[in-house]
Image 1 (cartoon, rainbow, N blue to C red):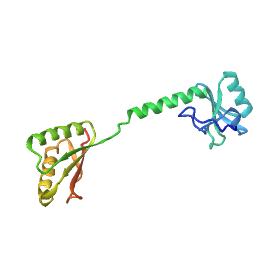
Image 2 (cartoon, helix red, strand yellow):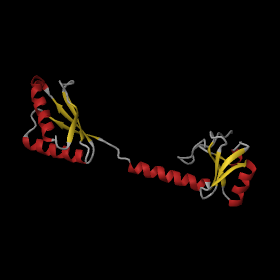
Image 3 (tube, rainbow, N blue to C red):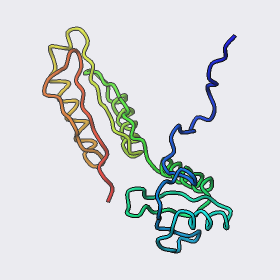
Image 4 (cartoon, rainbow, N blue to C red):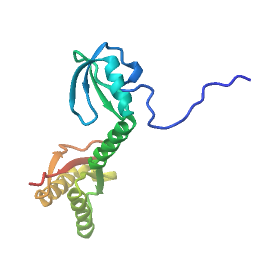
Length: 186
C-alpha cells in the first residue's frame, strides 16, 4: 500500500517564504544591517554569514532588488512572530461595517414605527449601514405613494445622524429599498 503526501499541518504555514534565509542568499556582496539596526556597510556574503553565526541568529535578505541586496542579521523566528502579532492587531482595529435591515409595511402603525425607528438609530450610531425595506402585499401595490411618503418620513427623522445612499424612485418588484449610512462624526 502506497502512502500519499501528508496533508494538514499549521493553518497559517506558508508554502513560500517572503525572505531568503542564510544559504538561500546567492549574492556575492550584500549591504549588511546589524542586530540593533546599525548599518555595517557593504561586505562579502562570507563576512555576513560570519556576523550572523557570531551572534547566533539568521542572515535574512530584506531587499533583494537593491544593488547590492540588503541583508539583516536577526532572529527570523522572532521577526515572523512580531510580524504576525502586528497583523493581528491591525485586524482587530478594523471595524467591519455591517448592513442591518429593518422592514416596514405601508400600514405600519405609529407604535411599531417608533420601535423600528429606535432600532435604526441604534444601528446607525453603532456605525452600521441601514437598509430600509418597504414590502407591499396584494392591493397595496396600487398605493406606492404611501411607501414613498413613509421613506421620506424616515429620512427626515434620521437626517441628524444618517445620510441617504440610495432612494428608490419606484418599487422593485413588491418592495422599495432605501440605504442609509451614518454621518461621519466630527
